[in-house]
Length: 79
Ligand SMILES: [Zn+2]
Image 1 (cartoon, rainbow, N blue to C red):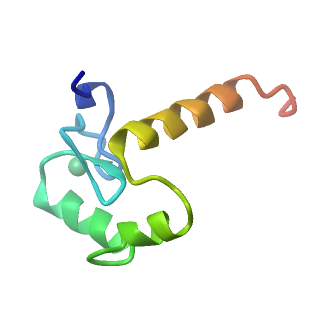
Image 2: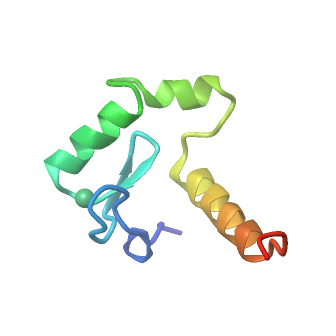
């Protein structure tokens, strides 16, 4: 099943996500791709994530994102 990126937003400008590069949700603008590349430590920066034991597959990144969102919603300590 293909991933539906349209339900996600670009991490840098908030536009609808069209692709996942450098372990980041991105739109198709070059400036956002460049920002993502810089944020991940330059070309090959996603390898830092891989080296940290994290997956660089879009499916896994989305899953982590959902887990993080779910746990923050269910956290009663911020009261
Ligand atoms: Zn963008």
